[in-house]
Image (cartoon, rainbow, N blue to C red; front, side, top):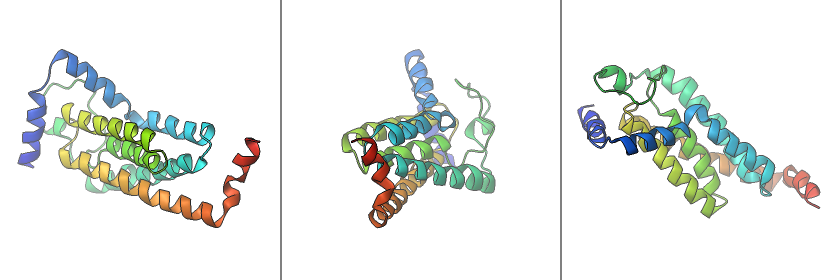
Length: 184
């Protein structure tokens, strides 16, 4: 764990008023997954290829169950800000456990879902997911392994969800028929 605190303290050395505001703003995109839930709903409603939204929705549900309901409660890892209260936080101290990072898992779940179908959109989404994950380190609310594990879980859930959705649509193309009728 010592190396993880070394990384976190290195980020603390980067603090300045401009970067502080930017990082607080970036991390808000992951708060409670609301931004990513809205993105998923927009993908389901507004995008012609419904597989993108279906994959993102399935990835969101699976990562939320795995990360927030199972792993956080099973591992019960304290947050760095709980362990070193001397570090002044720029946001409220989270009340739930640290491992894995929900911000990272939700961000990567949706971003990797998108990149499987729309490369350009996906690259932008993955870059935002990376920025959100790094913000959690900068803000001293997650350890590096929390963020890496969250990103990995989100990525894996998105890939598995994409395989399930593509296989489901292949076996049952009528799943997308309502979309085709709608666009005639």
